[in-house]
Length: 248
Image 1 (tube, rainbow, N blue to C red):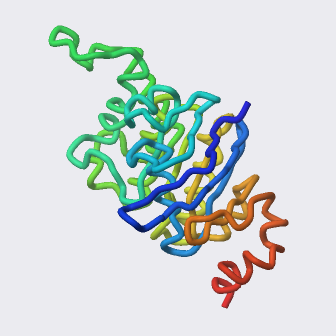
Image 2 (spheres, rainbow, N blue to C red; image 1 turned 30 degrees about the vertical axis):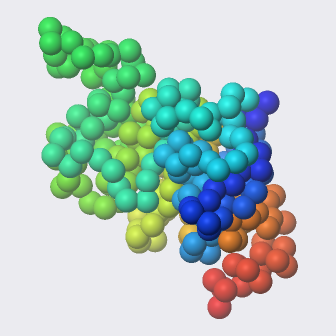
């Protein structure tokens, strides 16, 4: 069984074909990274997988169940969660409240006028445990909008995993970070995605080669290579299309 599978997936915007027959199998528990030059279609792939865009043809399966006809919220409830390039948090809620919101659905909580959240002991304890996992416990009660950039990204990663999804998609989680912040983010990602399937888009090659079990290279909407980091690094087509340009 594969955790996530794309089978000859294509996406057209009008007459322009952006994703041109992507086939990909990701095993349960694998850390898989998609790399490629700007405009290669990496984020578009994420949008197709998560249901934000409909595919033009092909199939996408989550744990062997077809999901490409489902809306994003139903895909999420089947066990897939994603983050975005642009940090997406509730800036006027506290860090704790952001995480508590992210936990609600998976914990079975629905709207109830007679059950205020402050009374939900198990829910609040779960949010506090997640704060500890994210190293944000000392920032618990401040507004999320006042966090540093790296802390906001950490919070978003926490919100992404809060629902208990088995497949996590992270879109450029270390973009814009300093070297120190990147090291912190890598350690966090490695820790909080333990035992989960991770699919990540990333431009920082240090992050990619240190974190990924498998790397897929996407160029002009097509996969030109996919495999272990060492084989991808040595691939001449990859060097010519992407890695060589970066090293220069």
